[in-house]
Length: 221
Image (cartoon, rainbow, N blue to C red; front, side):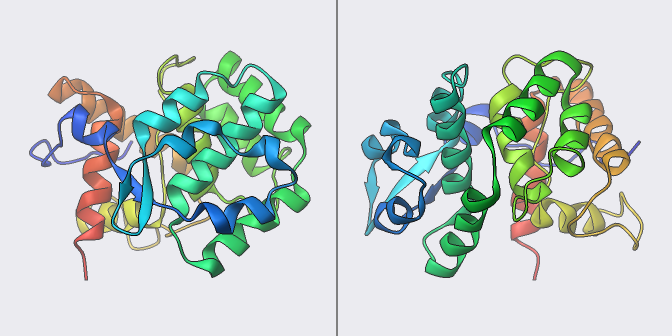
């Protein structure tokens, strides 16, 4: 298990749910398979400067409708939009996912999440249901939004990306060989164990720990 420092500076849960990122609707619509993939909730996101911004709270509201094919497509798009930003190159890279994904792959992974928990769902998307161009940094976002509020198994899914990974290294909680991407299922399990252990010790939600790691990683040079 990864042991995280007890004194890690944790944000409150409202701050976590309000974490928002800008997006450019005009870049996304042309790369989707059709218009039904776009979640209507994104059109109500507040404009901050030049761009609308989508927060975790909004993506959770979309995830609650993921009991239909269209709902699961909307969840995938919303999680990608939340994590991508406004750069054309980044959006174009995410567009490759839609060319190679299938509803069956997403359905199977979310079924594993519902029935067997976060680690099994991670294994599915990292192996049998792997979708090209949908790496762990993004599919853990999908799993987080799909299952964090109603988890199966011992652990709620939380996000693991390169920024969180850099924080784990900087805090000396993992060794130098710990990758910044491409984590194994066992490494994800160790991460979940560490996050949940600290969340229990501090009486907070696991995503407060994950967000703290993200904020720490963003401050690193």
